[in-house]
Length: 205
Image (cartoon, rainbow, N blue to C red; front, side, top):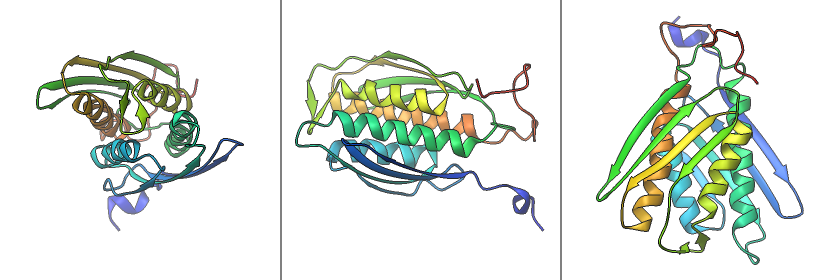
């Protein structure tokens, strides 16, 4: 028997259906960063693939939304569903690192993300774009995605673009930086096995 034989799988599936969207999300926190993602929005798919690949969280995401209106409901509701899946997979958040931050460079752009898997949702978003759209997606919707993710995952998330000119690069560094910070924050801390990393004894509110 190996040490991994005693590890409870940290997986979760969420289905969320409204009059605006129909979304199914499955994740594995201890995966390899494999993904199967389809939202109907090409650029959004590309960003979610980065989130999966660089967090090493396996993600299966299928979203059908009212894209004939715009991307808003699909982006926000996908963030809600991923956040709910993360919270479910984390359980009582016992034994995790909890905190992490990462500076992510991509050519001329640099973004910093910091995460506290605290059970207390909060988003600080200091990112500006000089274009209204990337692909079909309104650039203002990236904030809506991370707001929905943080709120439903129960995490404190700070994202700040330090500098950059290319809007594609700025957006991509946001998703990759969050992914890398999240990867470390949810990983097991070998010095805190089975311990909730909080003096109050809970990370669920």
